[in-house]
Length: 428
Image (cartoon, rainbow, N blue to C red; front, side, top):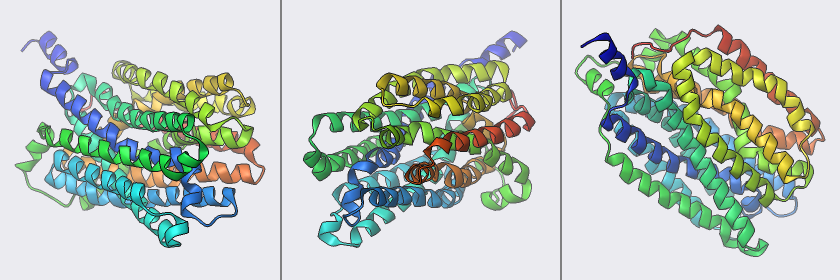
């Protein structure tokens, strides 16, 4: 094979690789619809699961359950990551989506506080814990599957579809929120509309399950099946501690800022400025479309110039943008839309890179565990708490300091991204 032919082979996706990436991305999308619907409808169903009397306290309690769900993500990253490293990416992905869809359907049919009392928030908490466990295993399994299914010169492009699918899940949840908020009156929305959203999410999960059962196992996993096997969790801590710490460090700025912008900005804008929630959700939906379109191009840029420059641009951009974003946030659709779009364009630098950077840190026999556990720990500590922290700050009349919360995360990101090794072109 000539040098020219080899270069083409490492930069072009074969038909089977394209098929695997499409199937993986669609399955991941419906998995994250289930996850994102909770935050989207939290202001709507908060009063259904907790005692009446204080709407802010009910919302904070609902968001606390949202944050507690993240506690299970490291456990899911460890347990399901090890399962995927031992039994295959396909089996791991099938298990995660089954758990996520089942939990959404449980929330959809759970009786309210007025009917079963304290059992209602307990069921909500247990269902969210299952979803957190599933999500903890999902990121590592789906990232490993997509990166291992790609040509070497297109790994960031393939990995970007992991985040395209996550964003698409959030987008579908946002669309559900926009449609139901716009078409249903308050009584219907609070009575059964939010249940419809969770029911749709659960049924979409069954579609994702069918898709995941149709894909083939990756060649990278098949190659380690023939070799000696070790406990993936022990091997990660013993042989790759530095890589695990790097994954956590890479995640901090990205997850905190992503959750503030994508998951909670509409609710925050509604509470802080009084803009109607339906209007805020519409701005979020439009901005998410722009974000999803740009993500694959961000992956292509990373494949061309490297992981470090594109990640550093994201974090440095938010150091500059954090203060004006929150300072000029007002009761206006167009103002909110511009702020959302600028933020999401910057986040492309992180989201297009995170899966590939993490996958490139580890050999295949510990790859899913190595991605899943440290990523989930960072997300639990910094991403899952972001909605609660911003809501609490607003309730304590500290909303004018949320920009500083974002800026500090961005500063940490700049430090991590400038000092990490470049992994573009590394052998997997």
